[in-house]
Length: 410
Image (cartoon, rainbow, N blue to C red; front, side):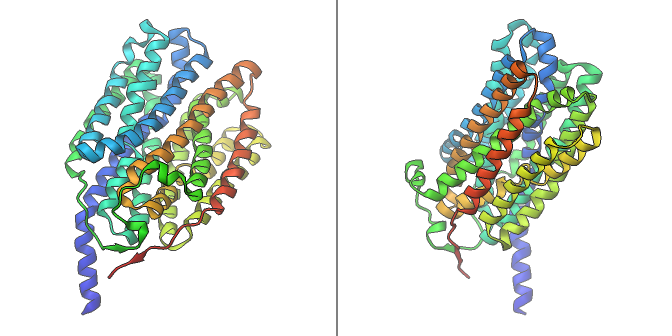
């Protein structure tokens, strides 16, 4: 009888928060799908605008930083306006950035920075991980948050899997301008999902400081060595992902392979990260999150080293993409989970937003330095080695994090 009651309770709770999780998953699929395929526009922009690849890379790097900077700002705005309003503003800004792309060739560098670097980046940041994880953490019982964060994070990977081949097709068939405008329309089409986004709290009560309702500022959080270690690891993650998202098509070209390999590789990364995100989300409920995160960074370092010494064929890229995909954005659920455990779900949107800012400082460097490397050395070789070393440092930092175990009240 008691077991039946517990099952009924769990079913009712699932009905309460599953629509929110699914809505967050789809919104993240759209915003991250558009953001993660921005590198496919680099070559067409170089041809259409006459700007150098390092200049375009700088605009993309600014976008990476602005995407990160927008997330803690979005968390603060959500406390005043509500998550729904901030995510709506984000989708509108993202759409504006993509719909304005037809005017970029006439404006030049300013146009690239304004569209990709500011409007699209800030919009995607307002409708990204921090706010969506934050609102889910307030609605989902603590013992289910690993599953919830893994499922929401899988949406970002699904976005890459769907949007990479879609964007490649649109650019090839209709040109990059039509492709950009189409992505802007898709961003607007996600607006109806906002009906399921709310910040009302539900689920089991949680005892202990880790789930305190007290407001924790960044200054206080930064005093924690654990929080600093998470920032270090996420800086590395940003460096790696932005370098690949921006310059994967260029590396494929340097290897003498057809352009379709880049789009396919991005899709493979997205597909395997769906698996990685769901697996990691489950592991976060039963295993030590610092260890899960450390092994993900270690896997990434090994994958990069093996790629450097492998022959550069299509299948090398696809296998490399599959291995990378298992750790790609699967680092997000354990990192967000640890921030929540350290400082409570109320502070997750803002404090994880600041962690995402560190991620995007790394992303700025990864995107920009990749362009500098290929322009001056005609190779990405030193970027790959820098990537591998940083991944090893991130693994060590993650293993060193100490997270308190919360007590769940009955």
